[in-house]
Image (tube, rainbow, N blue to C red; front, side, top):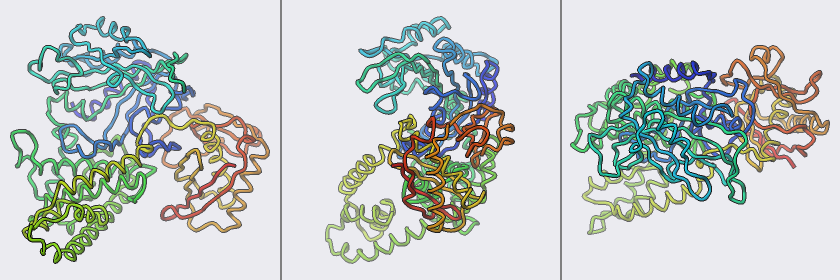
Amino acid sequence: MTSDELRSKYIEFFKSNGHAHIQGKSLIPENDPTVLFTTAGMHPLVPYLLGEEHPAGLRLVNYQKCIRTGDIDSVGDDSHLTFFEMLGNWSLGDYFKEGAITMSFEFLTSPKWLGIPVEKLGVTVFEGDENAPRDDESAAVWRSLGIPENRISYLPKEDNWWGPAGTTGPCGPDSEMFYYVGDKPCGNDCKPGCACGKWLEIWNDVFMQYNKTADGKYEPLSRKCVDTGMGIERTVTILNGKKSVYDTEIFAPIIAAVQTVTGYAYGAGAVASGASENDKSVRVMCDHIRASVFILGDPKAVSPSNVGAGYVLRRLIRRAVRHGRKLAAGKDAPANAGLLLSPVAAVIIERFKGPYPELLDNKAFIMEELDKEERKFLETLQKGEHEFEKILPNLLKDPRKIMSGRLAFKLYDTYGFPIELTGELAAEHGMTINREEFDEAYKKHQELSRAGSEQVFKGGLQDHSEIATKYHTATHLLHKALKLVLGDHAAQKGSNITAERLRFDFSHGAPMTPQEIQDVQAVVNEQIQKMLPVTMEIMDIEAAKAAGAVALFGEKYESQVKVYRIGQSSSCFCAELCGGPHVEHTGVLGKFTIQKEQSSSAGVRRIRAVLE
């Protein structure tokens, strides 16, 4: 079964079971400072899991593009990816455990759908603890469907519990489904969830039935929800009996493109234990270029930079370049003047343009940014080589012929010069590197980086605090004010909200004058002082646009949408299609102050503002 077939079957199955097919959302979360990227299919649906009404109803299904970078150093093995597609279905207070499990079982085992033999399936459920009882309800449903007792594992919270993402909020037990790939058990206790590698997880049903309070109590939720997730790449791997996600049809044309640009034959260096180091480099290139293409091809695309999502993108691109250079070393340069990434990107765009047409729409930007960043990194490498040459005379004076690991790390940290290349240059002069010293410095660097990024990579619930809700409402006022002062071309290009400020990007070709900034600020504060009501109406998408509601850039909307109006219906100040939290009236916002106006990118300006 191909990935396209799996994607279509999944949507078709759940539509036949009363689910509305909703559009997947951007890789760049809107108004959520807790994550840099959309990390799971549930991420864009958090407001509705928390109780907001979804325009499409109580049963939903979609496929969602996701990015996770927590295991970036593991990419190249058989299963880890930074970009992946997630299939998901949701119940917003409709069916619960029995309905979710029964549908999961039918989709997995029915010959009409995936046709997996029941004897190949096993499941895990929550074993219970002092806060919540054992999930006998889920186990009983699985048992009634034909899963025997010896293939039902009861596991603790770290294995079978979801959330809350922060210290408080919705959470609950989950039930995970596993496919058996072994020939015989590893021992008497070999059950689903065993770490032996013979059981591979393919699906997860999450049952949000509790709310964790600030004092650590788990209170039952009045509105119970279901959130499920199935990774396309892993499931296709299992269904086709492949050992690695890179052995599927998903990656076949991408691997072929990497072989073409590097001159390396994938699989030629395979070893008994699996992929060779060079084969792993091919896999890293495939994954990282694919992830970069999807980030750059997103309607809310970011460019490579040294902060936030742009830094992650830069790291992915440069890792791909480094592995590509290693593979191409000593071989003829490719036909496109030595650039490795954009030819592979073209193949990826062609491969995924069906389910993700935005890639084709943004092809020129994707190719331009990849080429620009690759050239920039090659210049960085040249600088690193130059710095190495400068310190070489002193290195050669050391009779031990050992280069300090701290010095090698300085080349890495200051100039972005990879340790592998430092090692090659050192070897050319008969030297080795003190890798233990380098690894120690690198480990400290990782710990500092991890500590600093935990807040943005922790994932989970969007900020629905009182102040964040106020800032979200204020962005609507700011958007309209900019259009009134600067013109209708001043369209929103992105926003980011924290508890301290709002950041708003908009299209405008020149810096705002001090008078324009003052005028925009005055318009917003005037609407705040009027204490305008904020109301919501679910409307047909075409009717909403006909009524003058603003649709944000690049968004894919359902047939039914939420329209938020600020002001009386007869003369509202602004109306936008939106799904995020809002206050009841503008009078609670306080004083709006623009602190800074600056360039964000070509043709895009950025405002930083606060509510006082």
